[in-house]
Image 1 (cartoon, helix red, strand yellow):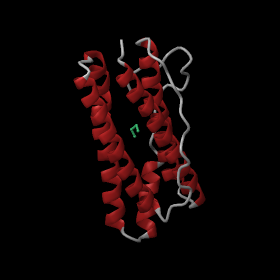
Image 2: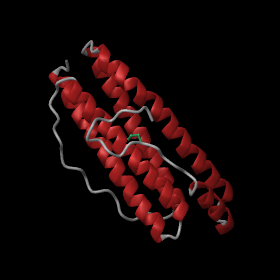
Image 3: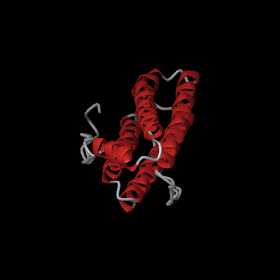
Length: 177
Ligand code: OFO
């Protein structure tokens, strides 16, 4: 059972995860336009992971007999100056999401909602990984500075990123990616 406050807060998080997906879709598109196919792949994998994050919450609310409310998704920025600009904004966005997950956890604790605390632990761990990945790529981009050769090496590396999140949510989310 979810309290009304917890239910509302989880609905807000669905919206934030959907916005994250939208933001990374925009960055994937921008990467393609810049000729950075590896970055485009990385951001598209990120898009699918964010949709999965949203759908996990969607399913959790449904399983708890709560009410799902879908809200409007904000328009993401469509122009970015460089790969470093995109990765810096990605890290800033993930730090925002981390704060949001922490706030959700605080609400779950205040509401004495143990099930939601356990559910949210997956997101707490996920955010550590998300920020680590972003920091790693930013460090590499800073290392190569303006070198086109260095940028192409990083792009080739990111082209290899694969994601295995489920994309058919009609029978529930399942899995633990
Ligand atoms: Fe990027 O972790 Fe969800 O939002």
